[in-house]
Amino acid sequence: MKKVFNLKEGNKNPDRILDAIKYEIRKYIKREKRKPLPEGVDFWDLQCKFGKNSEEAKTIEFVDITKNINEASKENLESFYMEIIATQGYKPKEKVE
Image 1 (cartoon, helix red, strand yellow):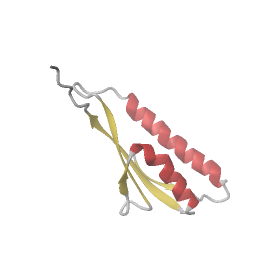
Image 2 (spheres, helix red, strand yellow):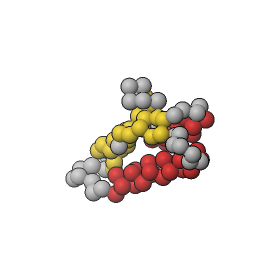
Image 3 (cartoon, rainbow, N blue to C red):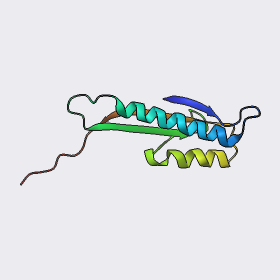
Image 4 (spheres, rainbow, N blue to C red):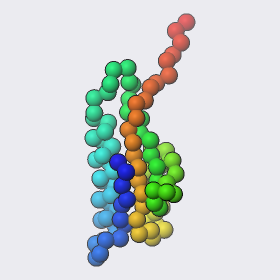
């Protein structure tokens, strides 16, 4: 998902817009995690970027998505850019003694 989300839309309530954005992102994440894993892959790893626009987007941790969205809302931004890419994740192998 590479998308610019608008926080200000006409006469809509900003809190409802914020809730709709968070819902859409959660729905996308659930959909990506439901996809079948290729053989040898342990989990879907989500690479995230966040910024005012695509040029200024910085890498963030997955757990910080909601925090960054709330900060963008508090800063009264018109819009923000969110990128979430599912990649193949591998758990480190444990050594057996």
